[in-house]
Each structure stands twice: as structure tokens, then as C-alpha cells.
Image (cartoon, rainbow, N blue to C red):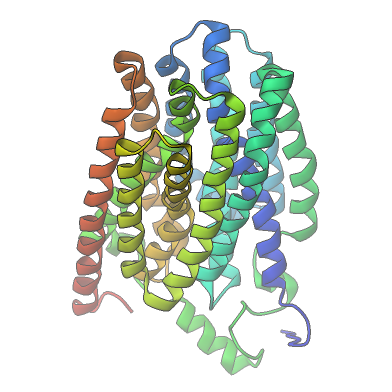
Amino acid sequence: MSHNKSKIHYAWWILLGLCIMVGLAKAGLNNSAGLFLKSVSNDLGVGMGSLSLYFSVSAIITMIFLPIGGKLMAKYDTRLILIIAVVLQAGAFALFGLMNSVWGWYILAIPLAVGGVFLTVIAGPVLINQWFKKSKGLALGIMGAAGGALGAIAQPVVGNLIANQGWRSSYMIVGITVIVIVIPIVFLLIRKSPAEKKTLPYGAGSAAANTTKNSSEEENKGVTLAVAKKSSAFYALMVFFFLITSAASFSMHIPTYLMNKGFDVSFAGNVMAINMIGVLIGSLLIGYASDKFGTKNTAMAVMLLGVVSIALLLFASSSTLVISIAVGLFGLISSSIGTLGPALTSSLFGNKEYSQIYSNASMGLAISSIVALPAYGYVFDFTGSYTPVLYAIGVMLIVIIFCIAVAFKGKKKLEQAGLWN
């Protein structure tokens, strides 16, 4: 295999493609969805809980399709899969603008979720795990940071677009724009594995056969999915995914939370931009800290900062400055899904069957969305306030710290039993 040290390793081009693709799918589509809720709810005369129920439909499809998606990624051409995925996800998003009944959101949530499984859940961690032998945490952090950067731009743009053009046109403009940008990026930059470019993963050393063999053996260390599923670490990781996603899901309701306090949609968009900056900075810090201090310590520290964010929203939310700081800190929680989740999976179970373990453990992510997103909407409908939700999220973050401790104790048991090799 050829390996030219004088050139930029192709892994970084893969990362660039992922940053744009995953960033737009998350920031342009998923994260901006909350900005539309109040306008759609008012125009169609539908309750917030009923409308946000489409997130649950999307989450159910995600949960069902995750194992299937992992197999399709392994079997078929990655670029073809991702191009189909962006047409499904962004195309469904654009079609929301033509809907006149809440049932339209429920139906379109199906292709939206199928495409999103590949673009926002599987592709990033799996491709980074394949292309990077070292600096995986940094690569995941950069990918998350790119999502934050794109979100910081997209949120106020979409907020102002809704205010000036209406929600129908805004859905179509955003969806079509994502398709037009992402398809060429996938076609030009994304490759399934280093073998396609006749190179080694970044940090794998020279291309000598002996080095390649040793690198391959090192990369395959860890446990199998069958072994992982019998460990407490696996179920603690599933609970982590469930709770961190449940907590992060509140970001969809932040615009409604702010508008309920008397702020307009433009201000909500600007504050969501600060949230995306928090995602950007948080992703880089989490990625660096995971490589430097370990994922266990990093994860616990991030959860504590999340508790601070919730406390500020509960007890000092009359100040626009405090709201901005709190929502910015909350970006750390959102960034944890794409940075801490994959990093914890690798730390706990290694790389032997990483993609299978990750896709199964991250089903906790899909399960949480079935419950959390509409539940927050119904709480708001029934109480007129998000205060009970904020208390619940604070408790979730504390429970996550306990789960992380349990997970690493489970890993130790696997090592002592000679199953981690």
C-alpha cells in the first residue's frame, strides 16, 4: 500500500466531507426543526404535543432501522447509500412545507428517519473509526464542532427565514439547499475504507507489510457484540444514550421555551446560534479531553456542567445574558451524543466489532426520542411551562454520572475475565 507522508492523509478529507454532510443534516435539518414548531402549531391549530409526536414516529423508525442500516453500510457502496439517505431526509424535510395536516408530519417522518440513520447516526462514527487509528476523539470533536459552526450560522438564518418567508417556504428552501450541497460532497470526498485509496488509517505508521499486520491486530482488540451484550457495561451505555439524548432533545423545545417567555422567533434563532457555538466549542473540548484525560473523566465533567446549565435556566432565567450562557452550556450536552457516545463505545469495548456494538447500544438514542420529545411537548400543553421538564433533565444528568461509573466497572470485569483482547 502506498503512503506518502508529504501529503495530507486522506482521512482528513474524509473528515471534511463528514463535517459538511453530518453538520448540515444535524444543524440544517434536525436542529432547526424546533424553530418551526410554534408557527406550524399556530397555523394548523395543532397542540405542541401532537405536532412534536412526529419526532416519536421518527425515533421508532430510527430504532427499527439502525441494525438494518449498519448491515447496508457494510454491504453496499457507501456513497450510494449516503446519496439516497440525503434525498430521503432532506427531501422529506422540504415536503413538510406542502403539508396541511399533522398526519403529513407523521408520514414524512418515516423517510426523514431512514435517511437520518445514515447521515446523523452511523456514518460519522463508523467512517472515523475506520480511517483514524489515532486522534479518534479529536476527529469526532472536529465533526461535532463543524455541526456547531454550521448550526451557529443556520439557526439565525432559518429563524429569520421563517419570520420573513413563512414556515412553508422555509421548509422547502432548507431541504433543497441541503440536497444540493451534500450530494456533490459525498460523491467527491467520501470513501468507505483506506483500502479504496491504497493507504492505511491515519496514525497506522508505515505501509510495510509487517506494520500493516501489527496495525490490523491492534485495531481488532476489544470484545465481540455477543460478549458485550452480556455485560453491565453495555446496558449502562444504552442507558447513557437514552438519558443523554433525552436531555439533549430539550434543545428542540428551547425556541418555544423562549417564545413562551415573551421573546420573538428571531431572538430564539439567535440564542440557538449560541447553543450551536456551545456545541462547536464543546465538541472540540470533549474530543481533546477524551484523548488527553480519558472518556470517563471527560464525560463526568460534562454532565456536571450540564447540571449548571439547567440550574441557570431554572433559577436565573429572567436575564437575556444568563439565558444565553445557559443555552450555550447546554450545547455541551448536545455535542455529547456525537462525541462522548462513540468515544465511550470505543473505550469500553474496543474495535473488534465496533460498528455492531455502537449501532446496537445507540438504540437507546432512538428509544429516548420516542418518549422525550413528545413528552416535553405534552408537559408544556398541560402546564403551560417547561419547569417540570428542566427538573427532570437535571436528574437525568446526575443519573448519567452513575451510569458511566457502572459502565467502566463492567469493562474491568470483562478484562479480568479475559474477554477483552
